Amino acid sequence: MDEKQIKNLIVRILEKIDMHSKEAEDLVYRTGKVESGYRYIRQIRGPARGLFQCEPWVAVDICKNYLSYRSDLMKKVAKATEVKLSHFTQPTEQNWAFILETNLAAQIAMCRLHYRRIPTKLPNTVKEQAVYWKKYYNSSAVRGTVKDFLERIA
Image (cartoon, rainbow, N blue to C red; front, side, top):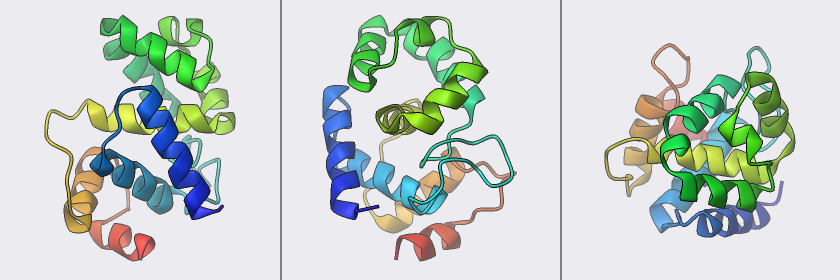
């Protein structure tokens, strides 16, 4: 996948949902690079979907426990991703598995929303991003490490 094109799309989607910053842009881009290498739309052994390897249950949780309390944001995300609002108001893992595998804009938005829920400032440096990714995106139960992050984005 062309790096310039994917970065451009990330910027456009983050701007549409009013969540763009240079830190967010870099973190979302690097998350995709680490999670899938921008090659896989399904986790090889697991439930994660899309270039950012979001699990459908996470998308459902974001809808139910974050977006449901922010209806204006929910509508922005639905519009920016061209996903029916009903998939946000009545989310199911089955629907989100398909959406996350097939809709790049939704993948980007869910990655950003995943990080948005963290009550700390987005990191600035690559090393800080690696630590942040490991702590908040790639759980301690998963094999990825800070070292993996740094090697994969090099």
